[in-house]
Amino acid sequence: QVRLVESGGGLVQAGESLRLSCAASGDIVGAMAWYRQAPGKQRELVASITRGGGGNYADSVKGRFTISRDYAKHTTDLQMNSLKPEDTAVYYCNACQTSIFYISSICSTRGFWGQGTQVTVSS
Image 1: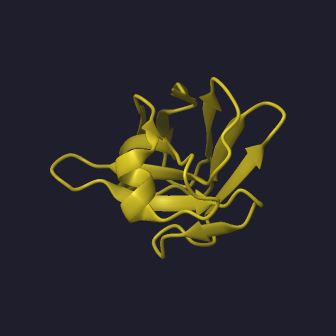
Image 2: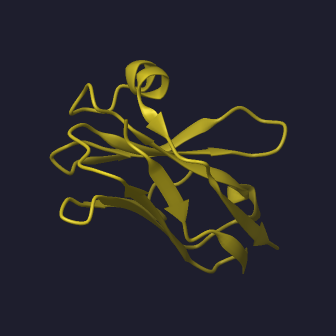
C-alpha cells in the first residue's frame, strides 16, 4: 500500500503560478499522473509521466503546466504557470504500480490516490 499526500494548492490570481507536489510513502515503480475535478464536473486527466520521465498533457494545459518526478524523494510535482480561472479545481495525484506507462483505464482504477489539494484561480 502506498500513501500519497498532495500539497501546494492555494488561492492565486489569473496569470500567477503554483507548484503542486505529491509525496509518496515509498517508491512508485510505475507511472504517475495529476487529475483535477471542478465542481459539477468529472475528474479529468491533466498530466501524466512515465517511469522514464516522459510527460503527456491535456490540451487545455499544454505549454503552461509541467510534470516532473524526483525519484530520490518519491515526489511528483506539477508546475502550473499562467493560471486561468478555469484551472480552479481540486487536484489529485494518482500512482500506478502496474504500468511504467500511464494507462488511465488501468492506473485510475488499480492505482493509489491522494486526498487532493484545492487550487482556486481568481479573475
